[in-house]
Length: 101
Image (tube, rainbow, N blue to C red; front, top):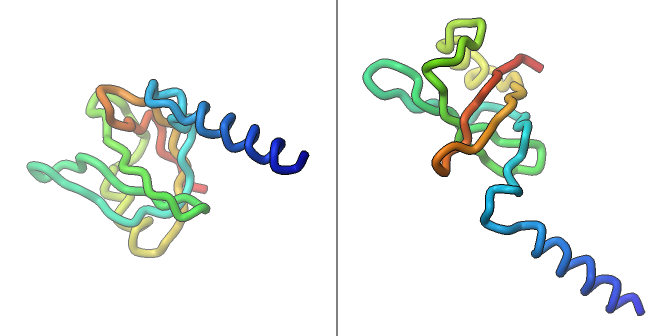
């Protein structure tokens, strides 16, 4: 009986991890481990969450994040965590908000 329950749980988990984008987190929180610049502007940054998974988040040039994005260098240097609301666009995770935690 336990095996059947474990198998059912495993199958439900696999079914939930489809490639339709439904497995995209709404929020990513953790420490910044890298920053990628292009033409002197921040293009993306990578956040390592509490489970050790990394997420590359892209900056939207049309979003006002409310601070100079160079501030994220300090977060990378001192390990201060951030929380970001995100959405998937064209296969990329886009940061809609970036907040100190």
